[in-house]
Amino acid sequence: MSPRIKKSFQSLRGKVALITGASQGIGLAIARALAAEGCNLVITGRDKTTLAKACRELKARNARVLPCLCDVRDPVSAQELVNAVEGRFHGLDILINNAGVAHPNLSVAELRLATWREVIDTNLTGMFLVTRAVLPLMKSGGMIVNNLSIAAKRVFAGSSAYNASKHGALGFTNTLREELREKGIRVIALLPGATDTAIWKTLWPEAPRQKMMKPETVAQAVVNALVLSAESTVEELVIIPSAGTL
Image (cartoon, rainbow, N blue to C red; front, side, top):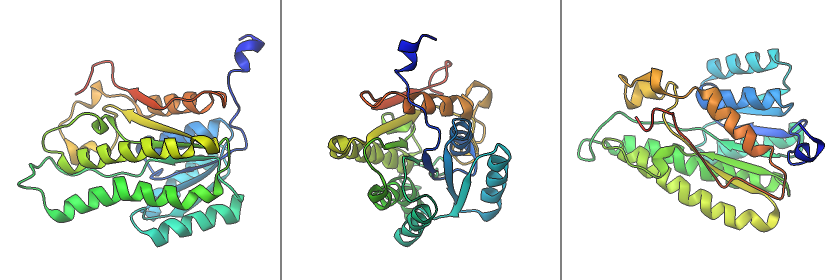
């Protein structure tokens, strides 16, 4: 690689990255990839056991890791998370809003209100709460990646709450990007297609996993977008399996 090309990328070494929902799946894959880049990590999850397991794995990779139990649906929990980040690292460079849930394939007529609220509160309101809470810690050069899914632009019958949450999250992400341009904080909408993670146990248990992308593929695409030099950005990152939309 020539010196001219090298200057087109920035190092992530020493930067502080917060990844919500990092106990498994795409979130954990992104945490691994950022650890390999030399980032200090803050990882969250709602389950103490899986979060501790992820933390041990990342520390074995020589990463500096702060695990935080956090329910992104709860504004108090979101603020406690931010307090922990500020107390340990005094600032934040990268936010990966990854926490999300799905629901069983049900028509609108069959979907329970409690299920609707859980999905919207986690995938949309949770993204808002965490983002709003961390913004005071972020300065020019900061980066936010919101993991939305291809469902932010397409619809799938039987997934009304999931589709609605992701469409709303895309609108939130696009608005946030415009608000933060002058502050020098980049905002990326991540729209992965079918990825082989545990979410399919809820969405579609019989889904053809062999046709899906690996979480590591999505994670590498995220890192590639983050290391772009500050005068450029990826606003929307769409990545789907070569087999197409399943």
